[in-house]
Image 1 (tube, rainbow, N blue to C red):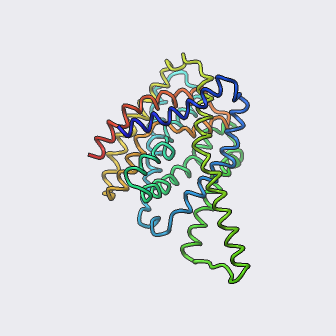
Image 2 (spheres, helix red, strand yellow):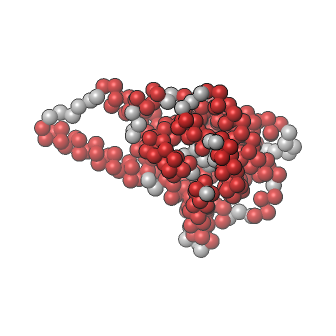
Length: 318
């Protein structure tokens, strides 16, 4: 039941953006600007505040988790490429969105409350650590999927983005903090600098905390502009089948081969069964992707997840 409630909670948050768009509180241009601010400022703050809560010991103990998260992305991309080979009349614009949706699912926002309930704060920290694997894939392979200019320099420019830069800064911060244990100078100078660091962390946490809410408003607003006849598109149902059934089953069978401890295995299972990412819609808005397709798959897979998440987790965690 808790799995169903969590998905319904996400849909309820999207309904806020849906209602705002229908009542003209949010416009199409406003939605795009929110997506730009989210990706450039707010989401990087969430990355920093989340990653810097980890410590080196946790990173070393569970080093397989981000790699296995990357495995999920690579496997999804491979299955997406295989599916596209059998799709007639699919253009580059659509195929880029299809592959992105195959590769990246809702790896953080939707599983977060569920992981908190099942494994507490330690589980949340490991979820964030695992998500680093997805972040690296999103801001490397994912960027190139939306780079239709076919120019390497343009792809690299898109890849060197605020989220990726902040991810690297966060990892360096944790390494320096835990390996070298830097100390502030004594006296009033040290107190002043300590206060600055504390305020900086508080600011990053406060701004980053808006990520989920704004993502849902952007998603709901974009769904409100959909022509619902697009739900009948065969590509929508094919990506939904891949993302909700085939990819999770193959992935869970694969990670069982790695003999992980129960918490790490459980967290990766929760990630693996999630629907397509809300962030993919923000990503598509930001980089001029096939946003109608992305928004429709977002709606269909989250509705379908009400059934597939409880069923798959009951099998995987039994």
